[in-house]
Each structure stands twice: as C-alpha cells, then as structure tokens.
Image (cartoon, rainbow, N blue to C red; front, side, top):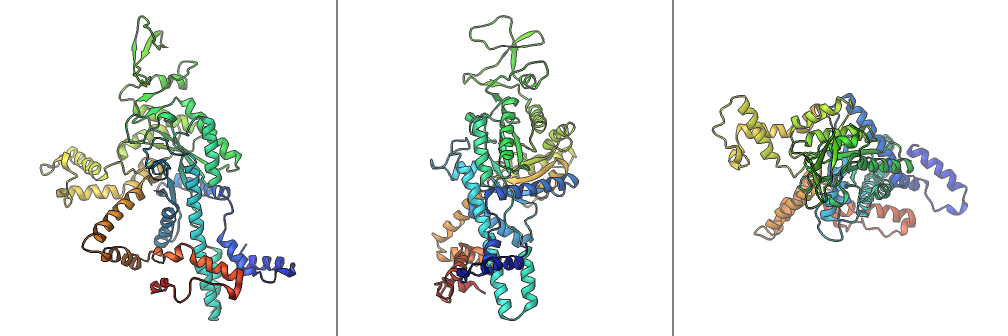
Length: 528
C-alpha cells in the first residue's frame, strides 16, 4: 500500500469516529511507515527471504558474495547500516554478525569473559532484539527527515518535488538486514539449544550458527583445547534448530554448521557405531589408538577389523585424534551436516589461506555440489604477516631473489614500502573476492571489528585529549571529521530520536506541543 493509499484508508476509518477529530490520517500513515516491522518474527521471515535470494544469486555468480561486520551494541549495528546506505546507496549483500565472543567479552554481567559459553545465554537474544530496535529507529529517523522535506516542498508549492518525495517514501529501503547469530555450541543439550534458538528467532534472527564443540568444554575457535562431539550429537542440535524455525513459522530459516575439527584434536566421547562404515565408525576411525593383546584395568576398547584397540585417553578423560587428520574430519563434518539439514558451512581455520580452504571445499562439493561457506575473516589472524609470508613462499617457489627479506621478520615496518608488502596488501584487498570465486565462500564476516576499532579510536583520543592537544584532540580528530565526512552522529540529538519525539508531540498536542528542536537547539550549529 502506498503512502497516499494509507492516508486515504486511515482517513476513512477516522471519519467513522466523530470523537477522533484530533487525529491526523497522514500522521498515522507516517507512524506506520516508520514502524514497518511489528515483531521480531516479521523481521526473521523478511530477512530469511533476503538470505535465500542472496544464496541463489551466489550459486549463479560467485561475484555476488555477501559481507558483514560483527557488533556488540545496537548503536554500532545501526551506524554500520547508516554508513552503508550513505556510501553505497543500498544494503544489498550486507548483513550484521552477532558474535558470541563479543557478548562474552562485553555484555556479560560477570564482566569480561573468555569465549567459553560462560555468559548468560539470554544476552544473545537480548542483543538481537537491541540491534533490530536500533535498525528500526534508523528507519524512523530517515523517514522522519523525508516527511519534513515533504512538508517543506508542499509549503513552497513545489508539487513536482513533493510527488518525488512521496515516491521515495514508497520505495524506502529499510536498514533492517539479516543477522547471522552465534549460538555457540548450543549452551547445553539439544533441548537447551532448541529453547535458546526459539528466543533468538523471536527476537528476529533468521540465521543461526552452531559449532560442533562440546558445550561444556567450548573454546574460542582460535584457541587451543577444543573438543568436538560425535556427528549424531551435533545433528540432534541442528534438528533442534530446524524444529525451532519451523515451529515459529520461519520456514526459510538458515542454519550455519560450523566445524572446529581442523584445530580440535580431542573428543569427549567415542561415537556409537552400529555397523562398519557408518557415521559413528567413521568418527571413531580418526581416534589415536594402539592395538592390545590383553585388557588392563579400566581400559576402554573398541573393535575394528577383528582387532582390539585402545583409544589414547588423557587424564582429563578426553580421547585424542591422530595428528594430521583435521582436514579429513572437517570434510566429513561438512558433508554430514549438509546432508542432514544445515544450509551453510563454517570451517574455522588457523590462517586465511585460499588454497587450504578451497582444497577442503573441492572435496565437499564432490559430494554436495552447491556447498557454500560462511568464513571468519578473523582479527585473530595476523593478516599482514600471513600474507607477506604467503607471497614470500610463492616467490621462493618461482625462484625469485629474496635475499633482502627475512621471512620470520616480515611484520617489521622496515618492509612496509617493499614490492613484497605491496603484493601482500593486494592479496588481502582481493581476498574476499578471490575466496568467493575459488573457495565457495558465500559470506565473509569479521567477527570482532568494532571491539578493535573502539579500542583504537579511544586510545588515539585519550592520547591527544589528555596530552598537549587538549580539546583540539577531540575537535580536530572527531568532531571536525564528523562534519567533513557527513557522519550523521554529529547531530547526536537527532540520532537519539529527539526530532522523532518532536513530531510525535506535534501529532499528540498540535500547537501546544513543547518541542526541543527550536532555534535555541545547539544542533542547529551543524546545519551547514
């Protein structure tokens, strides 16, 4: 329904209620436009459709990959989308990522925590709801400014401009985009996973990412000590999430199955196996075992090919896998997940190396041809050193003279202006494009970018403000840059919703409204 249609329909309703004379049909139309999404489920259904369309587009052309940045507060997510619309004119292909790591580090009532699922699980759906509250407010703010422009055009008698603004209102692109939300290892058993998934979907999540680690031993994907679970345990949680999506009516919901097997050398359980070659037997085949001829006290044994084998068990009661089996286990994890309800894959790697990722994806796609990845462009990687070493190794293989370089010290600023550093930076710049084309990566994300940008910008401001620069440290490097770059937040009263509140006051009280945005509002200093 168009803006004018909504006004006409609402006016018809008001006309039938004689006591509603003080209600403006156009004001109601404006409020409805500013509140397009009534519930989190409306958002989840809408954004799931977006992701499904984007996945189809990627299958047709890998150049159509998608991206997101991780965020830990609704304001951060809102500013990203405002920035995206300002610079690129559309939010197409851009999402948000909700990182369990950042919730643990920044949102827990216990204070900063490591990424070990020790934070309150209710904080995950709470952040999803918060993010969408801020994104919807961004819609309301932007449309509010369009309504003011419409009023100005009408007051000036410019019917052509007024009609163009009405058209823009009808075609307004929302800031609401898909969120890929981290449910860690499910925060407990499959029932716990289902209950939390429901809450996350109710809050608006259309895509949930779950990992195959043991829930009570969960570690950050880039730290040591990771412990995986047998496939049947993981599949129970994937099914639990699918049940949650279906129960809530989000039939297009997306499940991202993450495997940490590349860096996980331990398991807590020996898988149940019913016949040779089944999925439990395949999982167990990677265990580091030794053949035994006699049984010792407390031994746990498995039988294979007529032999008794003793899996190596640590004092922690964990069993270890054979070294060098990580990639094979990753491939098996991915194939099994896709064949049992997952939509996308996440392979947690120890470095950003296209050939390594592509090698595994090629094996997966030999079985599941349309397999696609979500990939963590992690700040845990030293991107500069990794890519300089990749170039060094490639040039070594080509026979280039590298006597001017020390491979172990390539992070040094001394190499910043070199040909090798320039080539490495170019590979970093094109990494996402190249990995999308070669390694099946549909979605690229950075898990913790705003954790680091907040720390860096705060350090720079503190150094100057508390040093010799004083107030100039803020004005020159913050406010002046906001003005020069057209950062909406320079008018922070407007961004916080002051003008939206003024509009509502006028709707409710008419000429009696006491508004904040008058001539004495210091935000007017930024009009130019």
